[in-house]
Length: 258
Image 1 (cartoon, rainbow, N blue to C red):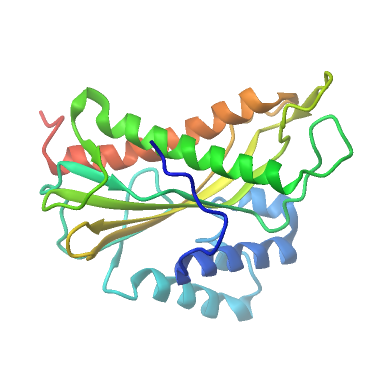
Image 2: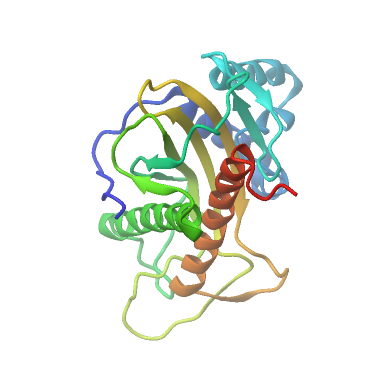
């Protein structure tokens, strides 16, 4: 079961802080239309800011991602990835997933679906913890499929520790089960970014660090949106990230090789 994230103080992580700052700078300077076309909000922010800020933004991001010796690599389906040179996941057959942390995009201040009233603090916390739970569930489901990689709560010699941060969560039509019937139409349910880190569970040595941004499915047409649609699309995004981790473990173990 996903431990319920606490709403109090969070462990400070400079990479998380930098990613959120770059994303907000981009939104303020370029507007939402450019933002939505930009791909990865945080990791590629420097490609869209004024020339004078490009070098500093890129340098800050790369320094944060690689400060402990990690080097940039290419991972299919992931916008930006860094890994320890020579590191392999072959020695890990179990996975420990830390409680998933979730943070909304700073400019997200919606009203309740079908209402002019703003979401309450309780509503926001329910959405945040709900997303944290479903992300955890999708990672467990993908990893334990066919009993390949057992998810555990303790460290061990063969245990890979995974830390997942969901950042810049933006829900276009949050449904809080308000009374009465209402319909809200959106193009997609919203968007979120993931900043994830992989560690050796015993030594704490960092093995990889990745950043990616996904947006809910879009047909290009307006469609009814609500809790079921929002949850389903969030699960699809989380599942796609989880499968990438599973594929990485499979590849390291030689699973699927002909």
